[in-house]
Image 1: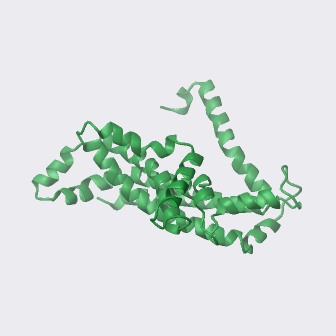
Image 2: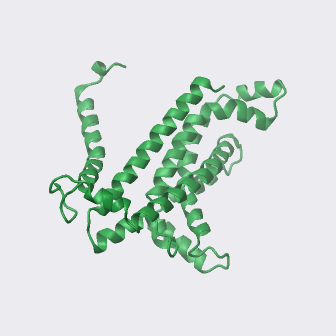
Image 3: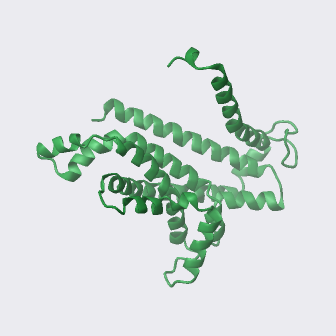
Length: 266
């Protein structure tokens, strides 16, 4: 469908939607480049003062690195578990499949505060050693991000032609080999999209971090919250610039990787 065939009202609504989505990004970027002493908008001139303050901050830089590491680990685990769960949910003939799918999607339906509080109470009342630990925090992030991988990968697997795998099996491939050689390259874009969602959700997660944060290891969202609560300096907005840049770069890198696989993979 060409652009000229799209009705004008739909194009106007799409343009307005794009503006609404991009406006917070523009506000954060301009606020982080503010030359004034406090976080205000419109900015009182443009300056890299608060960007340099972020890069030299003993609070924000460690928090940024910790959030990146935590999000990266949660994304890896969620991508593997979510893909495996998607294969099971789309191919299982059990009558409990719908119930299991609903359980897997509960972290999306439940408010983040409810999930964070539930994990906090569970960790505190058990002897698993997960309370205020890196493992417990990572489990919380995986629970939050895994449903996004399941949703995207399941959408790709619903219309997948199983006869392709059956043909590979008839030629001597094992079940795992057929999946790795046939199915996995085809659903790779959906897996990449799910991993992007997982990384973004984990990196910006606030509710779970609030309840499960570790002493002396503060994620970036909590560091930004504390800064805005007590100091209200533009350093938090400058941190937001780098968070936006990281998400944009990860999206571009993943799309490039998927294009490379389509071109040379088989």
